[in-house]
Image (cartoon, rainbow, N blue to C red):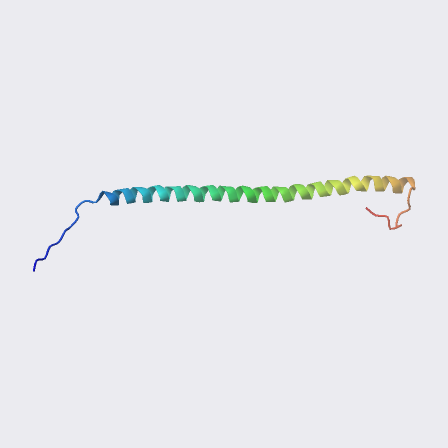
Length: 85
């Protein structure tokens, strides 16, 4: 009966694996950072889109009030007739 053993002193696959892990970790960080920037950009665009829509709505209301006041002033339709803008 014989007993034999073997111990690996150097395995280059370990270094390749460590290098690949480092590359994948860096790629994951860069992807995370890119998605973070993309999310912030989308949130800002949505916010400013809402602000712009609100301002456009207010301008449209003001533009519709002016002719109504003019028509009331000239007597084209009496105040309180239910015609409203």
